[in-house]
Image (cartoon, rainbow, N blue to C red):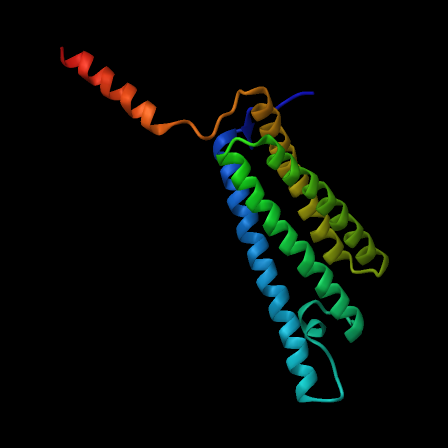
Length: 184
C-alpha cells in the first residue's frame, strides 16, 4: 500500500499527527458541550411551557423535528462526540507512548464515524435538505483524508520509522558532547 510522507504536501507526519489529535480533541469537546447545551435547552423550554410551539432547531437548521426525535438525535450525537473525544485522547497517548495499537483504535473509530456521517447525509438528502447533506458529505470526505493520514502514521509507527517519544535528555547530552569537542 502506498504511504504518504507529508500531510497536505507540507506538514511532516509527526506534526500532522499531533495537530490531528489536538484538533479532533478540541472539536469533539466543543461538540459534546454544544450537544449538552442543546439538551439542557430542550428541558428548560419544556419546563417553561407545557405546550411546545416549536423547538430550537426550527430557526437554527430550518428543520421541523418532533421532540422525541430531537431527544434521540441529540443523545446519539452526544454519544458519538464523547466517544470521539475518548478516541482522540487515545490517539494522543498512542502517539506519545509509541503505541501503534492506540493509533489504530482511533483509525477504526474514525471509519465508524465516517460511515455514520455518510448515513446522516443520506437521510438528510432523502428529506430534501440538500445544503445540510452537502455539508455533511464534505465533512466526511475531509475526515476520510484525515483518516488516511492517521493510517499512514500507524504504518510508519508499526514499521519503526516514526518515533514520537525520543529521549530528549540523550539528545541534549549528545549536543553537549559535540559542543565540548568543538571547543577542544
